[in-house]
Amino acid sequence: MKVWLNLLLYSVAFAAHAGESISSARQAELHELLIEDCGSCHGSRLLGGLGPALTKQRLAKLPRKFLIDTVYNGRPGTAMPPWSTMLTHQEVSWLVDQLQKGVKTP
Ligand code: HEC
Image (cartoon, rainbow, N blue to C red):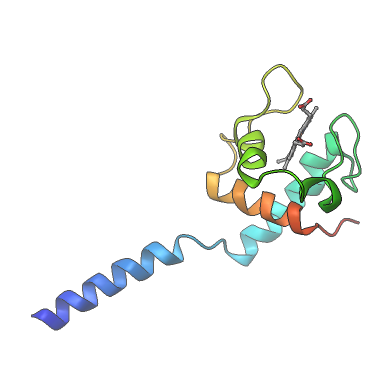
């Protein structure tokens, strides 16, 4: 009985953990979104346009939470739209992590 309980708890914990990672297929989609959708304002090489450059040089200095909040909720009163209807909070966090590390652009 105890063994089964442990197994059950283990699989629940494992499922919860698996939910935290983003599949490589989804990562590829998010990268495309970054270049095409975010790039429409931030420049296709993310060097800036209507919105500021999203380079590692600029973003590494800014607090992660602040950037996640900017992307998830947008910046009211500016052209930066909220992405909360299109992306999960976890996906936004992943995107911000990529940007702070530096994203490969065409
Ligand atoms: C319609 C145009 C537009 C689109 C699309 C857009 N942004 Fe923005 N973004 C802006 C503008 C304008 C700002 C500057 C807001 C301000 O004045 O504070 C901004 C600000 C930001 C900032 C904060 C930069 C800083 O220096 O504080 C980040 C991060 C960001 N955008 C990421 C993204 C990401 C990621 C996407 C795609 C998921 C995206 N943006 C799509 C227009 C856009």
